[in-house]
Image (cartoon, rainbow, N blue to C red; front, side, top):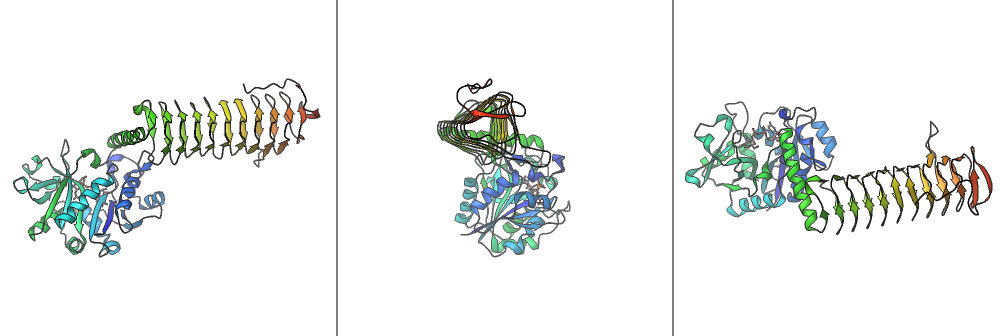
Length: 458
Ligand code: UD1
């Protein structure tokens, strides 16, 4: 049996007190609607349809063109919202699953179970129910003698007796396609002026059709996030889930309560994550690494056996055996080849550092290509910006850059060349030559020690 999914996400979410639509608030690296769509797309046989309204353009921009969007111009209730999907979905599949955009913790297995139950019982409507600690505000599930579901009564219109019912509607319902659309069209407006999707339950029962209720195993899965307190709670639960998933896969997380992993990352076996570390976006980390404490890694690719201590890295690549920090900053396009050592207070941007190159102390390397086994002395700066353009620095294999060298780009330092401590290099230095002074002059070949050149990488 084929399934289509509609995600209702047109509401503003006034309790967020936010300029941003509620469903775009993020947890573990994705907007909550992104989490719902991830699950929806794994289940649906046709592209999921998202009902947008408040901040619709922003929702579309953020989530991208992968999804089908329909607009609900006025928020007239959940029944009216689903009706907007009629053109896109009617007749496309046997089953229509209605989800809401603010339930980010929902698991695929739960929805699969709901759909299977709906199919196996040949129900016309199946509702996913739960038992919240405080059911106020939720639609209540009315069953006859604790058995058959006969009605969902909204809190806004429930009697005092009905308000005592503990079983509530999660907001997720499954329908027979052929029955849903004609009945949705005929839905009448409720006493509070909204078209309640849940009124279809009573309608089906009145026609002698079967309505099923499936109670969710873990009520946390259907937490509706409508304010920032619930957002933080949902994020905490999601983080626990992700941490446990990685620990079970062979990653050591020393303090799960202080470890912040996004949903889209990958971690290798025997990697150790030390406390207060954030691993974000699309980051992939190999085996046997030690990350943290206090590191923030965003959209990076990190090989095996690397160490990143108390450092920030964004859109950087670290090959195997790279050692970074403490207090280093790798920015976009930084590429550290095998066994590069980058010590404290360094910054690298849009640059390649070849294998076994060392950059031990407070240097800035920007827009540079650096060979293998280069020693970058303490305080080295690539002066890459002349006020108008970013210029390139090239350093050959085995070069020795003395402490406090200013490399005024564009400039090239040949393989095996040396620069003296404190030199300001404004012209290219040939291979094996020595440059020293301000501005730097070239002197012979780089044999022996010159002008305070010392290996500052140790
Ligand atoms: C709804 C259910 C209630 C259930 C509760 C669970 C109905 C009538 N009631 O109530 O039984 O217990 O969810 O949280 O369905 N939306 C639109 N357009 C609209 C109205 C809502 O897209 O015109 C979207 C909202 O963005 C939201 C979702 O539908 O994501 C649920 O709407 P909300 O107003 O939160 O529903 P409740 O009244 O809380």
